[in-house]
Length: 373
Image (cartoon, rainbow, N blue to C red):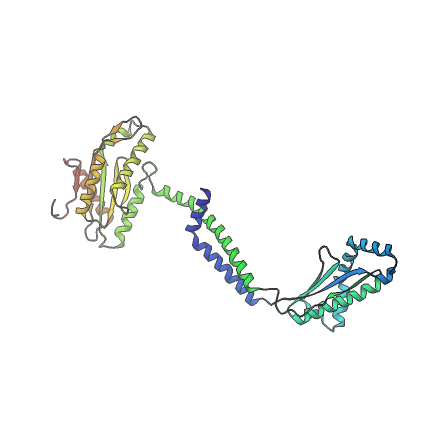
């Protein structure tokens, strides 16, 4: 259930996910466009016992030197020599280069796992320069080490070659990674947005809905009527007021939960009898208001007549089978050309007052002659 809830959140905010993903993609491609390509060249150096220095027939010395190599201290020492600033400075000077021209270049040495092999790598914007530096630094380091240590040899296993591809940026890889991360970030933002929006929607709903009946409250209902009539002078609308005379006596004696159950049941009946775009509000304690957009008075009379019949049936409102007769009275006000909301409300209230004394209890305010009434 929780997974389905998160899935619904993502579906409602899909545009945030796509917007974030494509934004990340555009940023990544822009970064690729302005970035300087960086190339890497590397050499491999192998460390082994110097048989001549140890003595070809001295098996004990040879075995001891191999054991020492397994402890990695010798290889680690050689790696530090390759990383030393002295070797690098001497190499740069021997090549006739300027340190100021090499600010974008980096070098480092790593010991390959489970092997007495060192890898020295140089990275920088020019493929030829990184290759020359890698080979030259390695040669100088080999020379320096050979002069200090005679027990172990260090020599080239592989020399550096000029790279034909930059190691970064890599447009396809970077764009794909950025798009994927954008999708993940977008999903997080979508979920956060939905979680923040839900309390706001609940708060907004509390300002619009009558908590007892679940119909709209009067203030929101009147705002909707003002908005509808303010859009156009030609907009057709009818307003019905349904007073439940049978409810008055019950409101004083019924417990609040029972009143809430009854009013919500009444709201449910109204929604079943009306269209989806009709608006139901609670006008006062025993009166409901119904706004019927695009509905002339004659059609509203027919619709609210059916609703009156549905509300006239005895209604069960508790588990012990008690019933109540609502005795609904209905007054209808029709909007004429250019009428404002207060005029329509006055007509509906006048019609409702007439309905209180009418045998049928259903009155359409007759401001003009209507055929059939």
